Every structure is written in structure tokens, then in C-alpha cells.
Length: 284
Image 1: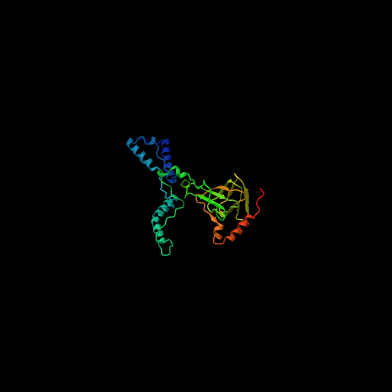
Image 2: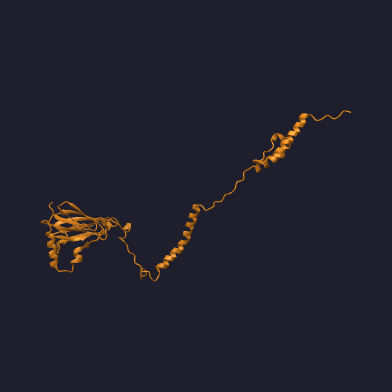
């Protein structure tokens, strides 16, 4: 009886090598995702099963995304919250202000409320005419029959509606022989003086008590800075006429003579006039 022949060496070696490979895979820790079996080894499976396995395997291999929340609120979000808080607190601040205004120690508690307007209201455009932009207040000589022998006529927006909101005023000064315009100032405007007729001495005193004085003839122009004391004196032998322009519709006028010597006798005024006349004039 013939004995069974042993398996062929090549087949036995193939089985042993597969066992060793399987044991090595079990002993080695997995690094990274497990590799899937190649497709050529699953050709024996049905098509539906292969499609299901491939879909499920692809879903498992998708990376997982974790939603990370910021540790602190963004700056824009904080600004929006602050703006909302201010809007919510605005009505309470208004009520608090009203309470303080109506307090017993508030100086604004008066019997009636008065509205003060800096300037003049504008006329209705339907009622504006060319006459509002013309004035005849400066076309005649002023009255110089007084102690100073001078006359000053100032036209502001109160007398000339066309000057309203323009920031301008005009004036005319008439000086008889030896006539004088006492030292005065315009607190809200500078003055530009034009000599239309005669010969005059004009000047102003700055904040350092320095005198700026000049002899003016017909056609000359002189400028007085705002708020500084200035004066004018007729040194000619005829009537002197001058016109001035101010850069304010309400220049104002502060006269030193009227403020200090109005209630005094005329002797003191005569001495003051003689003192001013005796001042040395400029050389040219």
C-alpha cells in the first residue's frame, strides 16, 4: 500500500509565511489609520456589498472638526454692548439733568424764560427789496457844534438791514477845525479809516502803552486793531471828513472821555483838549 505523499514544499512555505506575517501584524502597534484591503482582493464580493463598504469606510476616514469657542468676547461685540448700554441709559441721564436743573440751589429758577439773540433775525425773503441794501445816513455832514467839535455817525445792521449776517459796519466822522475824537475803542471789531477830505492826526495805543501815530492827508488809509484805544484830531484849516469800515455788524464803542469826565466841569475838559493839542506831531 502506497503511503501518502507529504505536501509540496512550495505550498507549505507559502502557508508558513502567511502565518508569520499575520502574527507580526498582531504584535506591531497600529500607526495611523488601518490600511484597507486592496480592491483586487475583494473582487469576489457582490457589487452592492463593495459599494456599502467603500461608503462606510470613506465616512469613517473623514477628519473630525471641533468647534472652538473664543475664550473672551470679540472687541466688536464689546463695543456693541457698550453702545446699547449708553442708549438704554440716555433717558435716565435726561431725567437726572432735569432734576438737577429744578433743584432748590439752581440759579436758573426764575419766573420767566427769556431768549437772547446774538444778532438780528432775517427778513422774510418775500418782503426783501433793493431798499434794504441802500442807506443815506452818511451823505450829509454831521453836527459839529459841540465841545469836541466832532461828529461820528455809525451805521450798523440795526439801521441798515442789508448788513445783517455780513459782518460789516460803516461810519462817517466829521471834524471841524481843531476838532477831536477822544480816545475810544471798539471791543468787537477792527477799523479801517479812509480820509476823504482834510488833514488829520490819528493814532492808537497798544497793550504795551506804545503810541502809533501818523499824519494823514486826503486819500490816505489807516487801520486800528480791534480793542485798542485810538483817537483822531484835525490839524488842518478846514473841515475834515473820514469814512470807516468795521469787520463786525455790531462793533460797539467804549469812550474813555464819556466814562470818566462826563459829570465833571468843562474846565477839566479844556485842559485835556489843550494837552492833546500840545502833543508833538509827526514829521511826515
